[in-house]
Image (cartoon, rainbow, N blue to C red; front, top):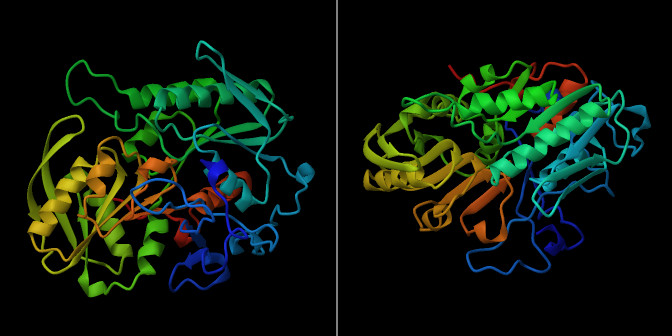
Length: 403
């Protein structure tokens, strides 16, 4: 997909929109989010809407985010990596996101060879020395989950055998996170199994974004930095001209109430509504009723991921039935398993807002879709881990106060 993208002089300032959080003007709080709506000189050929391309950082103008140019640290934007032991490598799952993270840090991606043999086996070789280096491997375990997970494990093993000082698995989307408990007899807890595999492969730390449940952190016997993608969505919603009196945050199920409540507090302390549902099987749900008032309001539905979109679409149908004026769907992870695209593009939603934690193919775009980048969030956290700083010592980077 990347080879088919051609920017008009990269992107003009009007095409590349940088949002910053309202009311946070101090140097330590300046944080920019790239909204991926750049115009293409040759639009992608598909029928369900204009494509949304990847964000970029203009190296010619040295557009390095302000966080890295603060007095706290020196940006690594001189192209010379001999003075730093920080290395960032990308797997094949989401190389565009890894490139954006490296740009944020002022680095080039590390040189690595990943290929598959005729029988499907994966081969990994580092093409540069990592001896004594702090290595960060960017690899979401998104579909195909088993392929990407195995690739991550082999990358970790290659770095360990190359004498890396520390190995951090940066997992923007953690597959198998939904298999975090036993709901029936004789079930596996695959989330714990995957955590053990990553640990035994040689990882010293995991950096994950929006795990399905916080308890998954306890499955790892190594440190886990758990960051949230909601600040990126919050800044984007804050830039829209929606009256705070008209907003209501909706949790699509009872399990997401804590997440939605914390999100509502950050969104001008908006009221909260809850969709009550009963799930009869995997990827199958049925909505029963609504707790809260949405009549005449703009409803913002929040979830950690959208898979087949059954939950969020049935919730949107209920919200419209209860008199909601507009419905926005927001999530961090756009899994988009069939028939999610058909459901989401049916006209129920004013806008579907997701992040680029999972790469989207050309046929997964539709007119209502907006993709936001979490590269700055991941890049800042990587820097803080490398620099032995706290990942949550500033309010903007703190968790959303889940309780």
